[in-house]
Length: 519
Image (cartoon, rainbow, N blue to C red; front, top):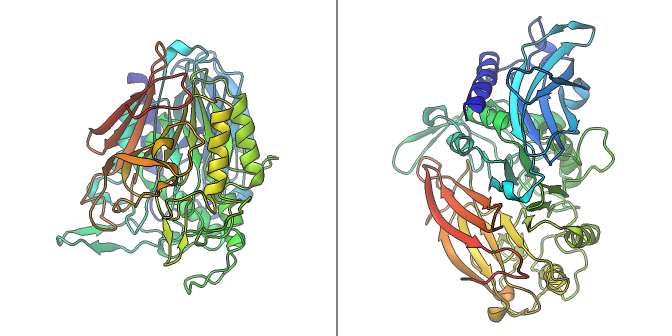
């Protein structure tokens, strides 16, 4: 990892020297050359392509150079977009024609648009492209839930420490399973814990209230980049990112009108549009690039012959939260178009493993108030009703098309667990057995385990959760998961990890089966 450490350290030191909590807006920045104090990110990396992200402190042209070595001999140059106020001075550059299964070193230079000779200090990053051959193997991490429930960046404990622990594991990529920010979760300077200790938050203007305007959403997404651990991690590990509710507002759904005195803008559709724009500006997402045609979060990222990652969006196309007892529900949690897309892409996939990145769990009951439900399960263990009907349709499709190697990964519920779904103990039986693994939070409050709904026969094989709600990261370790696919055998190993290096639970799954048994 020597090359990673040198590259990341160089970029991190340059960013740390320029970045302050009260950093001026780009228009007010000091005179000089363009700076990239917020670091760099790579995302949606495949065997031959990837996206590189940066933010400037003023108008600038983005220039990316790539090389097989840190010396940048025989570097390839990519001319990126002009960064300006229309994208909050952020931009992504698409890299294509990359060699498969190789370490790619890159550096981003920002140039004055009026004088290309006037450039800022390059910021360095690195990532590995997906392998072209199966025997190379794949290893990635996943988690979610960042800066939530009032627990922001605490300099007293070293900030978001789990990011540094994940960086040291040097995975091929990181799947961020939603709740990447908490736009509806304002921070306060300090919180006294039950044991008398004091939690201290790094504060910004945008994080002192709920986000409503585009500028406030942008500031919310920018907040996490104040953490040096996050910037170092981003410079070394590419991401596959999805969103959930807290990027907009807790438990939101299309068409919702808020009865919340904290908001002057009551139309959730307006808030969601602003958040999605900021989300696409602050993360390198292939289907959300500014000026692109697709404008959606759901997509498939193909990571070589062993793995396809199907990134779902369980927010944008859902119906309203309700008691979930309706006997006819075509819209469900995914919407008609996204469900058709998922079926089509699963059928086309030739990967050994097909990870379904779900921003909500399938069989865990997640309430929304006294009568409504937020996720899919609604506590009735009988035949599928409400949103369960759409999931039943998908599971039936997977079984009858004999689609093998499906695995569900999620976060959202702020604890870590492993559920095995088996038709033998289910009310709905027309599906093949499968596993769902939950991780998180990565930097947020911990919560007790949710109840299970018996419709699809989940058995909780493992769970680690606090006994009370909103346990701070100072009181309980944070969680992330690890998936490792062996290139020789195709075996997939899932490890549920706790911050501090502990492997809480591990399970090996075999390839080539329609369903996976509990054993």
